[in-house]
Length: 300
Ligand code: HMG
Ligand code: MG
Image (cartoon, rainbow, N blue to C red; front, side):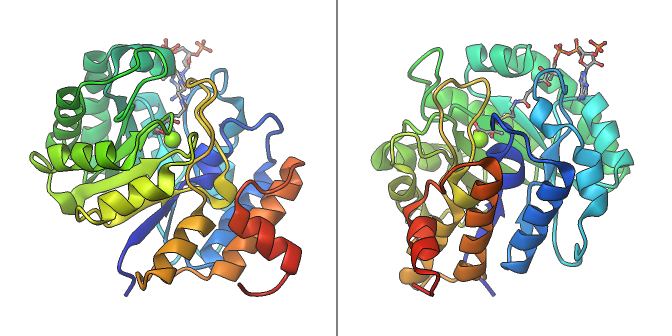
């Protein structure tokens, strides 16, 4: 049994901001590669407006085409009832809804206030209960907002508790612009853990300022055991300008396994997916771990 659970978000968070969209076939191949590397939870796409995020068009076809789904969860990101219905009809068994701790980010990202977003979530949760689908909840801007700067801890705690109270089994705390540093990240997690069980908390670190691994380590020490990551360090949010990708899954695996924390992931196979995906996107992999493994073509 792994000691931590990794939630791979590359096929969604990683690809949603790419200039060159990947075809459905390439996305399926990426997800199958990630399954082959041992990842058990892979966010496979989103059902948002294709006018807002064209890169995620075709998510239903992606979900339908992935083979070897046994023992694997492929959550789909949804913002509202329309997205939920599309996800359910596509055969999703898990979804993720997303709120923000910052009003401005909520407006820019999903065109409504935080309170309005919760009004949209209620029918989604109801539908998910009926369809026996698990629902994960994201909170964006937990350590800072691209529009407002500092975000009150009380806002982060409040939105996290609201998502938990309406039925999300896990709350993923998103450092959307990667601005947090380890003590701030730990303090934020401690505050949220006052209202939401720490076992239901996940950390979603973007690596914009190179702080992601340090923040993860600080939060691991506070009892967090679920971490989101994106293969190759791909990604960013289209509504957070300049925000770069999530922590690279292979860097996270390298650090955790090196510390004796078992992830259940095969680093060589994972690095292979990172390199192959970067090639399809027409660029070099951004993570040092995948770059060095690609250059050597051998085990680390
Ligand atoms: P809106 O314009 O306010 O929505 O957008 P609306 O209800 O007024 O509908 C407008 C049009 O969108 C209509 O179509 C709807 O049918 C359509 P039209 O009549 O113009 O042809 N529509 C949809 N189409 C497909 N799927 C849907 C859907 N809903 C409405 N689900 C909306 C509201 C939420 C749809 C829009 O703002 C949107 O799609 N935003 C994209 C948000 C997004 O994907 N952001 C990136 C992911 S979040 C993230 O990256 C952060 C995270 O990683 C954590 C972190 O790092 O912080 C999770
Ligand atoms: Mg994100």
